[in-house]
Length: 236
Ligand SMILES: [Mn+2]
Image (cartoon, rainbow, N blue to C red; front, top):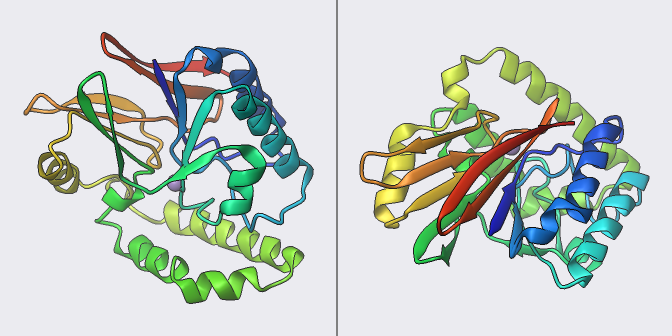
């Protein structure tokens, strides 16, 4: 069985969420052949040199989990796209590209954070292409750690303001872009997070889309096996 989670938004001010994640790693995850984290594990990530207690605690727990022979994979979210090779080494997590495809029990499955499908939100997509450029990343990472944290905090509050002024449907995934991706890649299953609108949706061509939930009062995990799938939530 495979396990999929996303949008934990781990934050030093939200201890319960971190505890729930660490508990998942040390208890429930043992049953998974592999655990996939589809982005936004952290509320923000300012660089692999982050030595905050939260960063250290999460890396150590991931390392313990992975060093017991458990496979764990990560896809960048829009908030933690700066997770890099040092984090990979420190945690034992393997980073996959967004829209990575796997085959499990004969079915083709694509994994994505999900923001790539939010094509109606032009403002968001413009910001994304700007801050994912090599120049922006290099400039950002060359700043001292405390300045990077201040910039991330500022971007976070701006993003909250922008989101509260946008119609809900703009921030959701675009149906045509999902349908096109499923058809073009001949997928049986597409799994993504980002929109915080958990659902399992059967599509007309027999394929399926799963949207993971964000961890707030509840945590979410999607479990998938050849004869079983379940989008589970649990209170935090
Ligand atoms: Mn996101």
